[in-house]
Image (cartoon, rainbow, N blue to C red):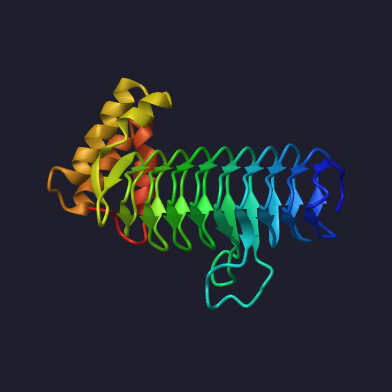
Length: 261
């Protein structure tokens, strides 16, 4: 271990762990030998940070959370896969984040300024952007991609390999089995498009005109009864003069599980 911050003497810090000098570690926390923890981080009592895991600056891992342990994948054989976490994230009680597998990216990656509420789960090989909120018991299957500013309400479940676009809102108890485009509010079992996340967009500085353009794009894709290719063509045309629609069009192009419809 390098560094000498506020570390409770009852914590178990393995030889080889790298902690910035001001890191705080609570009683009975466990830090593994291949862990790197950046400045300003706080690791709560009884929390576990293990595996080949790197945390950036100012992350707060609350009590009983588990970050970086082995994936829940029968094919995993102990390979040195990783977890990479940015800055300013909060991991509340009983949050679990598993490292990657060699059958995909070999890494689970989380951006910055995310809030993971109690008992939420990020499975192996997931990519989570920044400024997201995972409410209590929100769960990602393996290989899921979540873009920036996404909100997953309580008890949300996301199927393996699904993608969720930026600024989407997934309502509570929703089962996501296909890809959710940017800006869309998804509801139900399985998830269906309900509307756009207009309130979230306004809070994040989208102008009334931009919100209106996104609403029109939603109608084109979901409410006019158009064949998918026809709707995509119209969205591409609109995106030429409405840059807020570019992420919408680009997301559709990289969808692999098909869009919620």
